[in-house]
Image 1: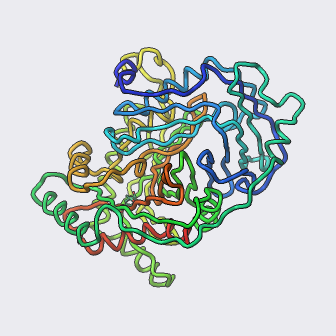
Image 2 (image 1 turned 180 degrees about the vertical axis):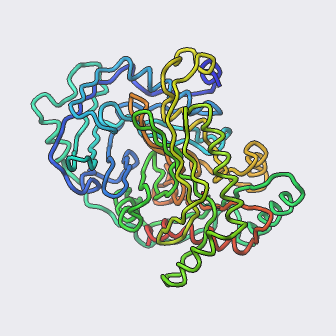
Image 3 (image 1 turned 135 degrees about the horizontal axis):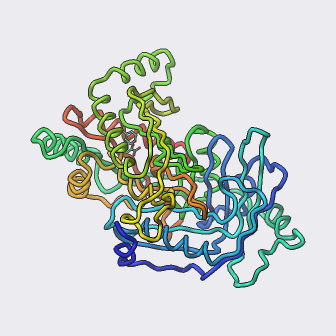
Length: 453
Ligand SMILES: C=C(O[C@@H]1C=C(C(=O)O)C=C[C@H]1O)C(=O)O
């Protein structure tokens, strides 16, 4: 889609015309989550295996809606970056001007999408030479001082006042849009449509609402996610919080990577039995078929952007504490964009957000074929997904960054932050059994349930 077409999508940009950004190297602060001053809605987290970023405050915010929500946001961020002053003394992925983003699954969803440029960001990353850490301060004002002249900004950012972390208390659960019985009837409906030949795969999700006695603290939730699921991406962006195992796309210096997951079994807690189940999963024709559909659709969507791609022929089994998934890690080398695609971007590499826009929705969260499956999801699921199953992640002004698929997550309600709506879904194919799919959603709710316990 051209930039001209995307600019028609209704959007609201609260971004100032420019910002002033400065990144400085700091000593390794260790636990990044411990630096967050409070756990309120402006908390931003992107963390995996103790590496990543935490951030807070809003120096700039870009809200978009509609089909072009990601491309519009990408273009707005580029405009902001072009007008801004950036002093980056570290030059690693995640330094300089960085925005965190989250986007709705469905083009028509009123929750649209958001990019936030935080006021303060602290990051840490393993490099061949050891851990490197940095702080980025962003000034929304038009001045040139990012507030770090004599370092009081950095000191203030790292040692400022912190409110006590509020652990979630007295959490009760309310049913979501549909009862378990009702949802299984919807799965049976999807299976019937698939057997009739309407689609090959339809991903159906369900929701539930947890209510705590006090406003939920994003520091408490992300700390629990990061501890229990260190190999997944723990995130908090625009009140969407979770721990997702699925990388939609990473762009780093001309290389792209994506991790396709499809095909799932629940873990039993008995390692020996789980190993046998993992072997069975790797041979299960239902799961392999579901997985192949997902890999093929990702490779096809990536194709126009890359010079070469490596797509393993056989999936591996990803072990998580709650479930195991069939997984395929796809890697590729990007090719510069051509003028017919985006005239202003001829010769430039597509940003990670542009790639995310092209890949979303994958078969892992929509189905196959994409268009038909997404309209069947809308019709059969009967529930707004909001930001669940949409892209969530971050990007830098240079277009590098990471977007995952927002799974194993929930969104804290803005008008009542004691409440969080959580989601889980599964790929339905011709051989799916409604009760097993319901059990699978229960296993996928587990990370959020555990974080709220
Ligand atoms: C849709 C979800 O998970 C997706 C569906 C899977 C499946 O059907 O096997 C596996 C991983 C994810 O790609 C979810 O967790 O909500």
